[in-house]
Length: 114
Image 1: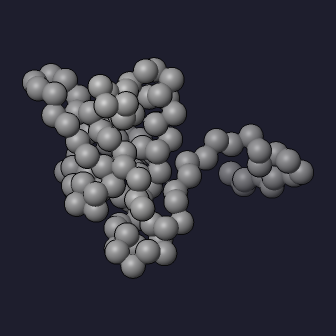
Image 2: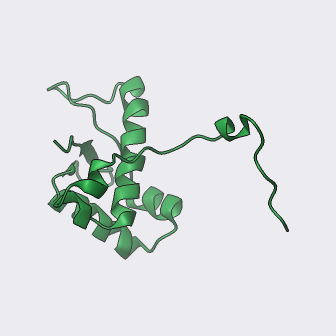
Image 3: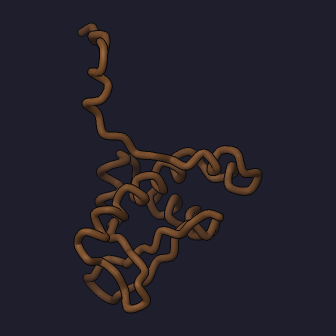
């Protein structure tokens, strides 16, 4: 099968994840794996939905839910790799996970990088 070309403004039909350039240019943050950077971009995208859903804690901070299974499905990676990417973002202080107890997904706070 041969793919077709884009014409005119047809490229506007796609939705995109935004990944901040600083993740590639900052000497410390650039050490993060490309997969973790993509995951961070996906998490930033989910912040808008969380805000619309009212997922805001008692301190006014927006959080997201993004389970290991959802990440596994969306990135197409092994569950072990999913956990590694989350640890990578945790270690870089780009996210903070709050455990809620058995059977409940973690709250994930997507942090600013500056």
